[in-house]
Every structure is written in structure tokens, then in C-alpha cells.
Amino acid sequence: MLSGCSEVRKVTDAIVKPTAREVYARELKDQPEALNDWQNAYHFALRDSLEISLPYGEKGNFIGTKNTAYSYNFTLEKGKKINVEVASDTVNQLVFIDLFILKDGKFVLEKSNEKETAILEFIPKESGTFKLVVQPELYAKRDFFLKLDLNPVYGFPVAGKGNAAIQSFWGNERDAGKRQHEGIDIFASKGTPVVAVSDGSISSTRNQGIGGKQVWLRTSLMGNSLYYAHLDSVAVQDGDKVKTGDTLGYVGNTGNAKFTPPHLHFGIYHGYGGAVNPLPFVFKTEALKASQFPKKYKTSQTRIASQKALVRKGPSTAYAKIGELKAGDSLFILGQSKEWLHILTPQSKKGFLHSSLVK
Image 1: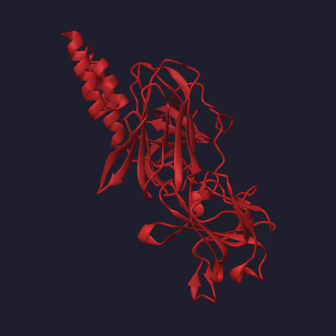
Image 2: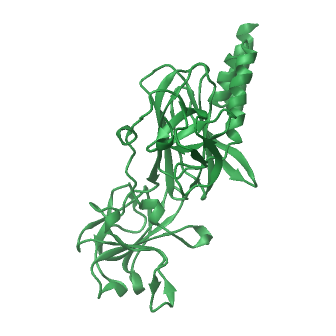
Image 3: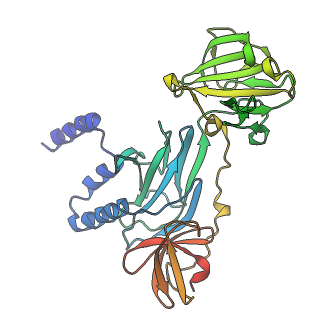
């Protein structure tokens, strides 16, 4: 009978696809009080409204006797990919990562990590507000480094170049204000290879109008049409299949760019929605490193050292005040993001506090 139940569960899971969190909760069915406490911490985190900006890093430590789930709200642009990782020296301890999107005033689960990993990668279909919840397994005790890295969905369209080569942006005026720039201009020497930023197929190559010599690439990722213009020469033909990094042509100044320095005009068009700002799709962000986030506190328990300490919604004075503590008040440190402490007050309120305000 037990074997039969197990097989039924496997078949059901293959259809329903429960999250790693749900599978783990089953394993705690013989510990109802512990499970209830663990789940309450999770639901409490879902109601939190702490805010961060990306990329974000935080060092902290899970306390085996204290059930705590970490949650953060942030905005994520279409064209960006978020990579979440909870790094630790301790093995064989589970961490659950859930990402939600705000829809119609409610946070809806978008993606969860796999049970045996502590990473999550996600590409949004649209820009929006998201919530990340991170919770270790019951009784987990270890130091960790949480990082939320941002990466562009596509590669960079000019070989050997990066962000600094972008010198004209989306929305800049053109023709004395008669039109706006529907793309970005990437400056490079004439003849520099222009490359495919994603796998796809060449839908068109042309030599006409203001774009001069141009290539249109239909991508496999996100289904966008990518526009490469002002090329000195074209290296592909209509219908060609290309891989990321393949050369499509070479930087030039054809079309209406003949009196400007050589550059690539790069644009993105999506379905019937027309042009979209290509900058988020290609702008590179440096990956965070643990060494950039020193952890200065030696204990998770501390007290306020100043006469007054403002608790904020995020790790900066730019975030709204959500509370106030006075000298001698105790608090619990959940983590540290550079000079800001992620704290829990005796009233079970979470927030951020500058590290100079505590003993």
C-alpha cells in the first residue's frame, strides 16, 4: 500500500508540479508545530513591504532556533534577467526561493528554485513590481551571502565594446525635434564587427533610406526583431540562421549617418507594439562579489546606541521612514547590506537601519 501511494504521488507531482517548498512541507507532517511556525514565518514575509533596488547584496546568518523568512520588493525592467543566489559554505541545507509578480494588487507566484539548488534565474515578460522571498529549511544554521544580479537578456551588438560606447540614447531628439530616436547609437571604428546578440534568423537585409545598409534579425529569445543600421557592409543574407556572436556586418556610417562618426544604430521592435527601448536588453551590469559586502557585526543581538534611530523601508536614506527606535532598544540583526543593517525589532517589525546607530 505504501509503495502504491508513493507511485500515485509521483504521478500526481508530474502533473501538478509542486514547488520545492511544498515537497519539503510534506516531510514535516510529523512535526505539526514546527511546520506551522515555519509556514507562519513565510506568510509573515509575504506581507512585508521592504524595498530594494537592483543589483542587491546582503550578508547574514540563519539562526537555527529562529524561523525567519527574508522578503524584498523591487522593480524589474523588461529586457533584464535577474539571477538570485544564496551562497554558503554549508552543504546539505535547503534554501527556498520564491519570486512573485504584482498583478491586480496581489502578488502571484512566478517561479521557485529547484529543491537541491540555491539559485533562481528569471526573465520577465513585462516590466513590473516583484517580491522575492528567501527562507531556509527548519533549524538551518549558517552564514550566507544573498545576491541579486542583473544581466541583459541579449549580448552586446558591437564586438569588443560595452556600455561606454553608447553615446546616443532612446528618446533623443532628431531632425530638430520632429522625431525621437527609436534606438541607441554605439560608436566604434569603421569595420568593427557587428554581431548577433541572440540566436535567430535573418529576416531581411537592405540598403535604403535613413538606415543605409541594414540587417533585421528575428530572435528566438522573446521573439523580437532587431534592427542594425548604418553598416559599412553586410555579412549575411536573407534567411540565414545565426548564433549569438556571429558577425552580421561591420560598423559604418551609411544612410543619413554619412556626416557623423561611424556607429551602429541598434533598435528593437516587438510585434505590433512598435519600437521599445533597447538599452535594458544590452546594458551590462557587473556581477556582485561577496568581498564588496563586509559583515561588521559579531552577534545577531544588539542595541541602539544613538538617542534616536530611524528605521527605513530600504537600505538608504532615500527610502521612507517606517519606524523609530530610541537609545537602549534591543533588536535582532538579520543581515547587512554594506553600511545598512536588515533588522527585526522586538515588535516583530522588519526594516533597515544604518550600522552607525547601533552598539
